[in-house]
Length: 514
Image 1 (cartoon, helix red, strand yellow):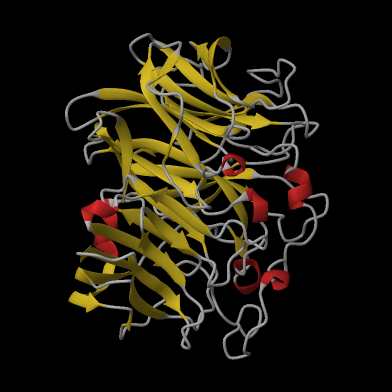
Image 2 (tube, rainbow, N blue to C red):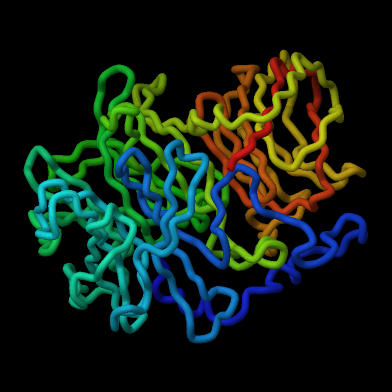
């Protein structure tokens, strides 16, 4: 994605990029010096070094998820050595990952570096590289302007890939935006289906061999910026209803919408997608859940669960991609969201939507649990807890008030914190009172609808060293945002506005991930 600006983005040294955005503060509150402290996340996936951006849809091979992502080994050096390769990490539970190094290298052909795409397992040898070969189709741009789709293949279980010549398997038809291929298998019709990002359109293509592609239709939606990283999948709700979903990463900020993952439920006949409604829903309402991918959930025996799909996104934003303290403290820039379990639900109006919860395997990595029970709050109540990385869950109940929630990563003097909760008719995540990457000041508080008549809300909040992810009620609404609190800001407080509330069954869990 972002082919036009990619080389400009990576050019030059990134070290020290965060210095300009950090406000002045007492010496005791600021990180002392480069590499003397760590901002690396405790339980979120982070790149080992240098740079990462787009996740690539993981595939299931020999009992493990193979997770590829865009990686630039020359990020800090900058200069002419720019662009991304595909790096690989494997995981059995999608919480703990093992680095496997570069899988799809860059600059080994005249086409240069490798951008976003997707990997598939060619079980029936349709492409001719052998049964079980792993096929990657990804965007490349030899002149950094013209985008086309190229094929790589692996015969060693997805560890290393070889280019299939230097010609594209899907050439550019003469358009500027033509990227991020996502390929799925249409077993019913015996062919492959590709979705492709083409400015305000998701293009659909067919192939029988993964090498030759034919355009068949397009799904056009404007008003939310250039569409990127398209997605297409089928999922079954608890009531037995199956829906097809088209998703895209899109920047809807200009229209007062999120700039994360927009999606439409509907039907797909193998060629054309028909949406249930014109307007998209959003899988995240925060500022930093971009280039997200969804992928199949495999049971322990390898079979696919049709009622659950996994999802993960890049915890960053192209508006401020280089601004992070991690490059100075730890030598890397790149963190992902927690992997989520996505389910299809039906609302009270009859419409279907996707609900999110953190991956269940997170429970297996709990290292400490703090049971705080029921806490009555009127105003602000500072808790006797300190931490930089944890999960907080509770149900807030009240008779009458204007707002309630948490002050996360609170400074010792109470002047800095991240606020999360509800206010009148919306849920919110507000990073304005702490250090964060948005120098403009415009993208500080994210909001999603909330019915105050409910007089109760369930919150599940994942806090890590540079991020907060808030899941509201059943997870229909989620807010994910980057934050850069000083490492001395470890406090936690509860608050209410214009009333009293009980924070029921308040539980804090900490995690250890090897």
